[in-house]
Length: 109
Image (cartoon, rainbow, N blue to C red):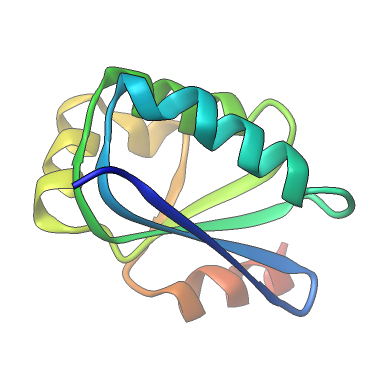
C-alpha cells in the first residue's frame, strides 16, 4: 500500500495522519503536501498509528520537518516504534502514546 496523507486541524495544531508505507518514492509528494497545507502556524503532530513501514527517506522527511516546524510524533505502530528506537530518534522528536497527549504538550511549552 502506498502512503496516504491526511491533514486535520485542532486549534492551532495541525495533525498529519500517515497510513501505509513511507518509502523513498513517497517523500517528494509528502513534502509538497505539507508545504501546501502549512500556510500558517508551526505546531505539528504526526500520527503514525497506521503507518506500517518507514524507510530512510521517510525518516529523513520527518526530521526535515523539525527545521521549520515544532513537530511531535504520536501513536507509533510497533514497527515504526522499533525503527525510531533503533535510530535513536527520541533524541530529535518528542514521542507520545496518543495524539491528545501530544496536542496537550504544546499547551505546556
